[in-house]
Image (cartoon, rainbow, N blue to C red):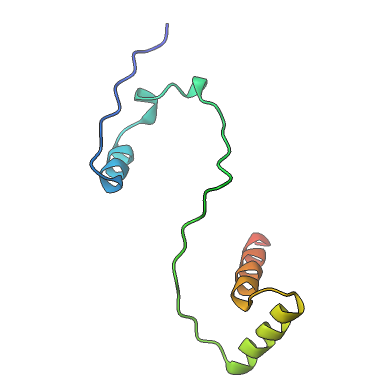
Length: 88
């Protein structure tokens, strides 16, 4: 016999929902045995701008490397950072 699930409340905003799920067990509200895995290919990850000071010579070398790959230097920096983190 499956347990009776509680109704998920309506939230005014994402912060309120986040606070709720931080203090409640989702298994009281969702039957995870019936969950279906989905792909959301069009979602874009959140990003934020940062300020990064680099020596001019290093930035020029990065720009040259990016130009050789026909890509923006900012994209190359992100790729290199992700690659380095994945290696650890």
